View (cartoon, each protein chain N blue to C red):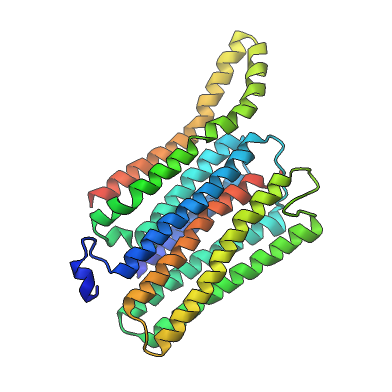
Length: 199
Length: 133
């Protein structure tokens, strides 16, 4: 805890509080999209179920594993920074970024599979349910944007930590953002993928 | 550090349960309830441990979470309306059957509700336990 955090009624610094406020508002953005999607999913008995066990569900499960593991390496990065181990912090943040890059790569290949092989586009698909593509690409696209932004954010923090810039709080705050992105995926994966597995 | 590894393993196990559930092929409503229950449980663990909320002051929790939960509950109020679109067909079929079958159908509905309620009940119990220490 840094000096000015002691004076805060929440016992945390203003950067960390600011990130929490951002997370709360971003959570509502995702919640709105997820509820909209769930509404049209439940209201439509003929909703398309295009996700094969392989590659669809296997890929999405692997992405969940990668994202959860990158959360664990982020925890390790915050831990290392607390012990003033800057080299270790940079290494762990690097591992977290690698997880993010693998996630985006897997996700993009899965998008390409849907677009090329299954002919699913944001505005049309073979099942005549344009809402499927609209909700799928909006939800997963917004999440992918968050992961990509997170990788850049982590990169900026890692570069600074290597040059003796940034404090323990800065690493913790970017960790909060990363865990939040992980958390959102914990809702997108079951609601979008597992609700639409090919029977 | 070991507690975080344990949480990570627990979250992976819950993900495994979710994937297995996807192949049970229950009705969309039941699936939604079960998957949402498990996902909320996962979210609670991510927030409590990875995001360190367990170790923050109660005041911060009270400032951040009730508004989000209320907002999300307000959004969820729309969902029963979505389920009604399918219920109309369901209700007509049920009404066309005789009384005995109606009783069996009602039992079936209660049985299907049980897993979802168990998951939510477990979640509530866990929240109560976690708030004690």
